[in-house]
Length: 363
Image 1 (tube, one colour):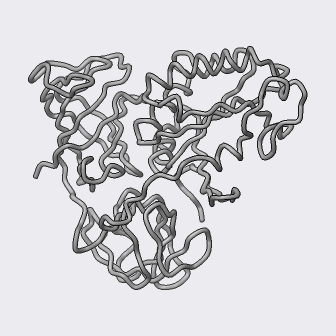
Image 2 (cartoon, rainbow, N blue to C red):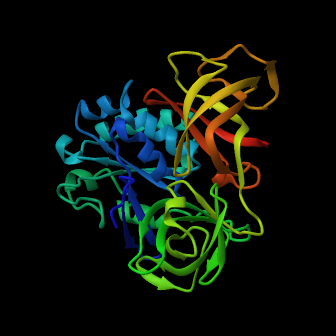
């Protein structure tokens, strides 16, 4: 398939679920791809290295564990399983497991995860301990009576799907088909689709026909919100489509704009954000250069009330209302209408500086 997004995909089954697993890269240079993966996810699991010094390196300043935790939460993932791996390196010590879960737990709570939605599982990938079946090692079983990783994945609550909303699919990959058409892959964020239906691609504003639908490598007649599908399309030129386009219902198309307003939460930033600040807008599978054109107001963290109008700059930890301008048109929705399509991240010189939700599209 020649997947270009550097997010590996596979599927497996648990007793009650079919799971599509996306392996997102952990390295700092590939955070944009990690965002693409996390934006399509319903739930997440974070793999940590329990060996001494390694967990600390990933968790302290500059490590990727924190950024990944913030990203998945900001992109709407609420359920998290944490695999505390390489526990065999520390002889399955309960103290080490608790030290890691306490440190991480405080951080995840600040990031917005509910304690009841985070599960910690001690594992060893090398020996396969506590992954598919409960661990047998006596050093582990004397203090750990919980689930193995597979049981935890099986017990995740499936999120509610927006099946009753108009059709939306964000393109994660595009490739040529053997026949006359071409294929796009991605997750259906809302609505459903049947073979033979007409679709509208935005921003190019071109229509085409869904000639075939493939789900888990099997041809199907229809698919709905939550499914990761491959669509075979005809009646349109592949050149017009790129990663980040949105296919939608021609009767109820997605909004396309170059200016929009949003509520953002500023993360740890080195320099204050001022008017004219350049950013990379990461949204679903898109990354687009953009500029913060207006700082409208600073908002109270919990109530959302305006505490200051037209601030000169924004500092870390602040909630604010801003206006963004993108270089090229982007297809997005208001957060209140489509949660999945109204969330985005902002990055600047290699780090994530804010998460936001779209409040108004300007024409």
